[in-house]
Image (cartoon, rainbow, N blue to C red):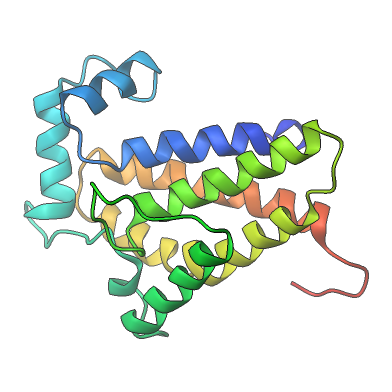
Length: 193
């Protein structure tokens, strides 16, 4: 993913793909991942499920890695993280799924929200509007949340020795490309990031 060709629509799609990748790989999710070329179909659903469980639920040789931001942040209490996330979601009038019942700080929830922000930017730009507010929201959300815990998450994930350690690296790359794009496009004169 090179920066000059990355637009908001592409980034939104990348975040949705990452959200699927870090969702529990039931047969339907696995089928979507393999059909979209995100996971090699040689990796069977049962194998990916075992890797998911080893990485995030029960562990293998190490402790499992939680998929929740508040469990990786030493600089902020989980309650504060949850409250800040809820304010972000409420500001944009987005609602958490009633059926999934995930916490606001779940990785998949955060990735889906970033995908939504990117898609909103893309839609506004297609209509010829000014999407600066969506870009500022993306930059703020990444800085205050995803980038604040992703390095620790990826280090812990790497130690699991599962396929998900590679997926964590891919996610970190998407976030860095996105941050580079946002830094180049939305930085005001005299604004230091």
